[in-house]
Image 1 (cartoon, rainbow, N blue to C red):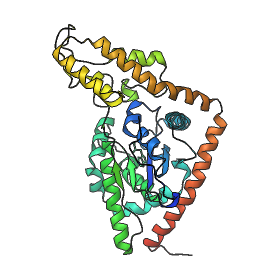
Image 2 (image 1 turned 180 degrees about the vertical axis):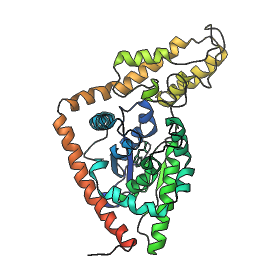
Image 3 (image 1 turned 90 degrees about the horizontal axis):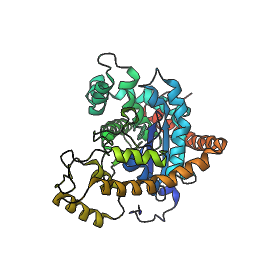
Image 4 (image 1 turned 60 degrees about the vertical axis):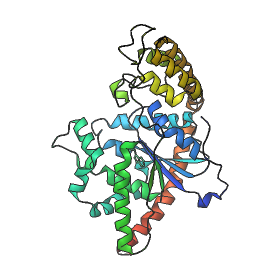
Length: 345
Ligand code: TRP
């Protein structure tokens, strides 16, 4: 995929700052790649980019599986490196090793009401999906505030995320405005979400959400045969029984994926028309998609293996990034402590 951003020749110090993060609960999949990783790989050339391994946030709904959260720190890091995130350009850091973040969270909690937390539509949906009912872990309900701490600690103005994260950015900016108003100056900048142009990629079964736990994902570390199998299983148009029948594009996952990944969109437009007229079989399309996905994931798999041969240096990448992030986040914490008029000893 060609970068559609102009190269940025400004000195690094004045580049816009990006922060994103991922919960370390499992390997990343092509939905993550399309929704955010691909943007990050492009933006690291023009922005000052930080990527957070959000292990502390992952604990808020995985307290019974702490090992899963810890084990996936290195896995997610390998996914980043495989996808083309370059540690020379992007700072990869570990959330739980940055004590300024929980400290900022504690301060911000004073600016937010419980009813505001309960109104966050993403949280509402997640509470429902996880079956918490009335037994909501307080840490979970408050994670949008912790995320506001993440974003503001780095003074990020750009946050490349999926649509489900928009309410988090909104809550972050409410906090930013309150802090600035109480200090009567701009202590923190407001942040803006950067959405992927494709929105959310459905699972291979056509369900709205791709997720490892639903078993409908294609992971970035999938083998060639796993990719092939996933494409073969992919949901198409259930009424398209004979090749000669006209087929439907809407809700047809193979076409959704082709729209997202096919480098030849003109040829794809013709295939769509042909499919709708009738005379184009699912197998031809699946063959095409398989080839394209093999081309996207194959090089990632190779890079992943190359990095995985030396896990000490992967750990060093996280250590170095976290040290750099510690300096940035502590500086912001100092400013925010002043804005809260905390007593200086
Ligand atoms: N909540 C995000 C997710 O589930 C992960 C995340 C944590 C994040 N901290 C962040 C995203 C800061 C953007 C900015 O995907």
